[in-house]
Image (cartoon, rainbow, N blue to C red; front, side, top):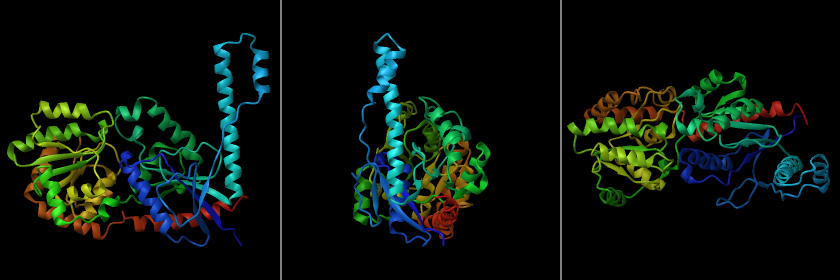
Length: 414
């Protein structure tokens, strides 16, 4: 009889809501895992380096702890014997050696703690989590943007390209399985990496918690009034201010659009990732100060109000293959205009208006089409939602299916 496999879900306590879609995915998936009754061949628990958590769980939590120790003196003596000149260089050499020693010790301690707790596999929910110790694991992939789109600063500079390249060449191939967010995402991984296809499984992306929030009509009206917005008289773009989000192309298209439709506004939400001032300066240059709102980081209830009252969502990003806002809009019955990415088409089918993110005229025409035929696209998105696979319920069922498969694989060794 096969042994039940214990899978520990890694809790990233450093993750906060300011991260954006990544946090929404992580937060909702943790709750879904905690609530779900998985197959009898697997047991799910959580593992963390710190129990400082805002959440309570029904499943068990394993706390990993490590107190760094000083490098044993014999290593220092060895360095002194090799290098007679004691100075700053020697201190740096000693510190580097100490860090290496501590890293190895921490890895060994964590491995033992996990094995003693009965854990056989770690599941990393976030693409940002990079395994730093030797233990069988399941990885998550949302995008391989440094290969699949243009060389935007956030993908290439400040060590980002090197980190991403290391992740896809040195870490991801070591995973027992890789969970991709869509079939389009799986196809991208097969195109840009050497990972075997049978290791890549699709756990569909899903909407964040904003789709579960219901606001009173009075509260919605107050929020809209406070921000000088009229129902169905504004386009909504929830996106952090990264270059790849293409706020620039959207603003240029909107500037042309409002010449014909001056009563419409454009609403931006999300935190600054280094590009906000540039976008604000462009708004001034285009004389759109009274037409474009920067509402910053909002609560999920406020985000829900914007979806429920917008003319449509506009998802102008270059980076995919998929994104969470189109799924949220679909669940809330908000029509969608989005960049023509394979993941977006997989999610929305024929229920959205697609455009080439390089073509501002095409985007302007998409906004005009939405204003003229909004009721058609609203019905289309509602119909698409009724048949959508991009829901948390389906994601967790797929995960359960793959866990049963990985249990068979992991039972091949002790």
